[in-house]
Length: 149
Image (cartoon, rainbow, N blue to C red; front, side, top):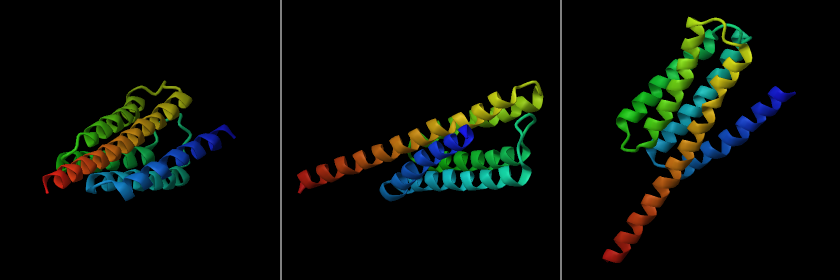
């Protein structure tokens, strides 16, 4: 029951943030939203396919996280914004948590699962902030251009 509540909370945050980024953001914000949504869908597929127990490294979810990390690094390299660097950094921590379980198998299952999930929320918050900042810059540019003419 508690797991379902956490999943609903995740989607209650993911859907509005990614919708806001898709409708109001520039290309980096839209790409970031697509990466988050695609990774979420692929994680669900990996979780249902491999049936994670979180008492050992989760290979399917780890592979999805590696692909997401590659996509975020690519976005950070080609974007002219700062927020993709932050999102990539947050996700790198989540990937490192997977690697820690490969090195030390004594990591508790609940701690592993919670730590892997936690970093999605700062990522979504940073995407929302980046979208808000993009809109603020656009409005400022419009005001400057209007004052010029």
